[in-house]
Length: 296
Image 1 (tube, helix red, strand yellow):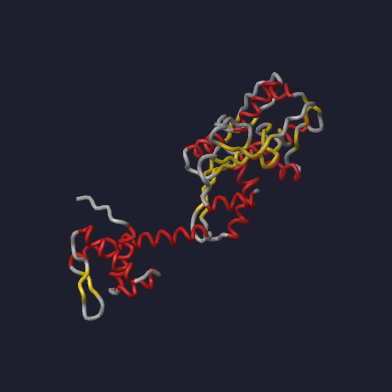
Image 2: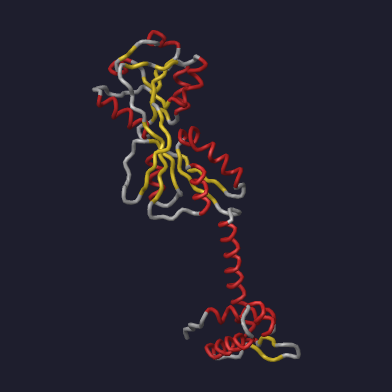
């Protein structure tokens, strides 16, 4: 037998069974006692069974009523708990933000905003999935993260993803004392083919950008070292293992200390950007929206 009772009847039943009083239930539900009585009558008729019997003080559940209440109470209390949790999420007392970012975008863009967000909303969990731009875009498409911060250039599905540039970045070549003869000289990009180069791995937007740029200047990028992080490129360059290709932010401390210097070229390397990437069709959770408010 399939039962299709009005869910409101079960809500009234829960309050009546819990209070064992029609009057008290009516007061808690802010409805009239006749309305409570009518709802219980309708429920009993739909279920073809007696749920209550009169007692010396009010009413009490029949055996059938006790059985039904054991299930209704669990369901209703879970709904009430769900409402409480939802309220906490809306009030930023519960929840999490899932972000996709590379080492570079995390260190040189996101960190100050995450610090401010944590100060304002200490109960919100922040999960950062660290990876190169293609991986971040894939995670966003698959719904594994709420938004990503990536470095241009990159290809993406314009129908599903929205992109907002947020900060300019500059790619440079740096070297240590072994390459001092190249310091303060105006170089041509073709001279890079004569030098031992240190670059990021091929699956990164930074490597793709530099390869495409140099190719447009008839220069082929053939690094001797391919590394996973820009921090390691800087360390390799400091140890004179080659000329490193990095975003300037990573090398600034070493340049200011004098352990590295920036190579100069007769053409400018165009600047590129960090970008916020969001899914157009997936609504942002409340917590992720609050973090974006801080960032933007």
